[in-house]
Image 1 (cartoon, rainbow, N blue to C red):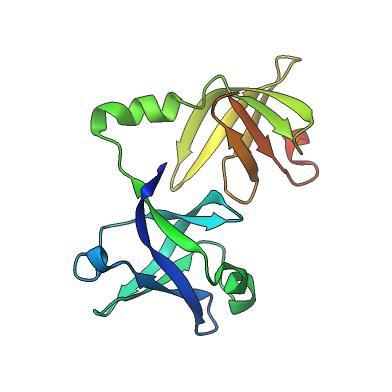
Image 2: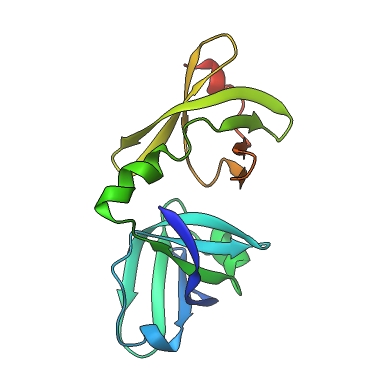
Length: 172
């Protein structure tokens, strides 16, 4: 999944119901042609954050109803109101492998200051990605590569900063 800030889908204008859905006011180019999507990026505090779509409803006009994996109450999604929604760009088949490998070699830091190790592999499991991180002691640590854990990604410095739940690195 790649972020493409050139493809603005719309803006979240309100929560919809109590089950964690949001209503997106679509850009004009999408009012009659909704692309097939499995994920989107929300711009939160100026940064793109990936979200997987669990449910999508489009009844015409310029409004789209979305639900995100792991966000099933209105209290969880109220903070998204006003955020812009961008499409993920689908890589071509030949570049998909290159995209998967693009994080290999990145250094992983916990809370931006503690070096955990280097990404040696990305592993797809169902609809989720795991990263295999090789620590300085040559220990392999598997971590879900999920937006809830990612603080930032610096492509120039090849650094991924993560905020991991306590004990996650010890269970490997």
